[in-house]
Length: 596
Image (tube, rainbow, N blue to C red; front, side, top):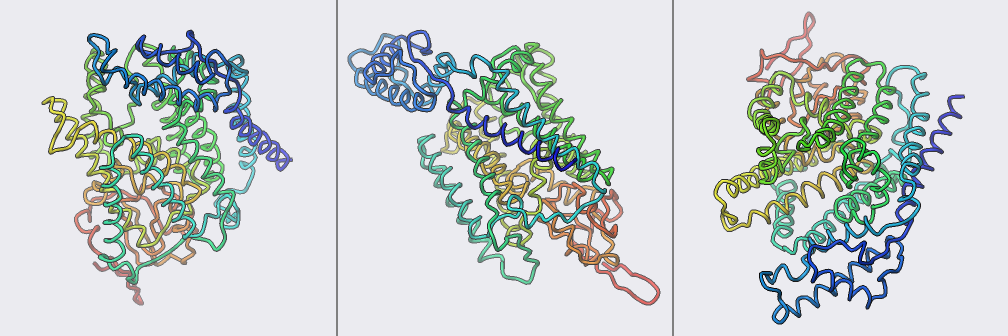
């Protein structure tokens, strides 16, 4: 019976995904004087003239075709306005405001798509919300809940034989990663009209590769545990590609997903009183995924109390602190604020607009600002000292919550090789340094009003960090590559807050994973399931505590160990020595002597 329930759940989920994807092409958009949303009369006249010439004025056009056609109309209107600057420039209007800038063109497209759209989704948003979100949730739970009846404990369930969770060959993975990164850089060049930062990024990538391959003895006799299979898991490739496309549309082409945004409008208006945006859509989807896949985590680790409590924690913090409370604050005319999101992960916390918004929102806004600053200076180091970075990365963080729930089926794909570790150390600490420098520029501009610091434009630095790190790295690559590189790509290689927490954990924290090497049978479960690419077995065989700064203390290595070799512990007795001393177990006739 359970098998048939799971099949029904899988069918419902696939149906919801099919409807969700097909919605992109439903309906039409009409451009006329009522639907045209512009800032200035001269822009309106130029756009209407170009639209009539293009033949799309007052004519219903399908969603995808309209966005392309309307983009061409705005481009033609902008060229016409540019040619009139010297002869028809209105009094008091600056030349750069007379033509239609790229950012303004995107706002015009987005506004017109909202006001001029018509179709089944606009007329029945709640129906489509049920047919997508509702059916997906029901289908997912029908597939997952019967797993509670399975025997407790980790099962070797063919993860390396399943096409969805097998992973891909190293050459194919590297090729896909290179294509994705180069595509983001090229798009960033055209989007930001700035060649400097893409060029700097390429140079830094080449420099890091040089240090990893040639300067750090990458062929030394260290563990080189690769997870690359001999065959490609094509279902995983398809899943990863779908997620990549979703994030590209979400971040850089939201006009194409207006139907998705429209269907969640009633929920947004109920919670915050405002129409939905792409970020509300993403927040709702994110929360639903964490809850449903969190239930899956509860079934998989039902034998381990620590894992059940940890999973319930990330489900709670995502639902309450990341989604419901911020929306309710907006409903109460207060600033949208995620109390669990801290700088430098929350990289725009010190942006002028955010500081001004908080300081102008009365005592609550000021309390939010003080909360964020005190958390960075006092709260985060103190919590990490006592509990390690697990208190945030595995119990609170939204990125970690998605990785631990949605990404859990692919946790075994994290590369355990020494070379991957070297890349990790260079890149994640480089992102942290970039975040610190960018924030210093932002604060310098805020307090002095100087827009160029050390020869660099502050807005340019902010734009590139937000584009490449905030969107490209954390979203497109960090989540889209779950089925290809494991579930902690962003946390392991890019998150600046994880880097900050890791530094505190490695050198000052009481937390570590202790090992009893005499009990290790070298089954490899711990290394297989480590999502952060740590070859845990190598530590266990040597009886060495695991104090890697990348360890997020998820405890899964301990949960899957059949001999109880690994324990998550706090202690300060050897805090000054354990990060630089190799502890080796020597077995004698009468005792096990631990020497340092």
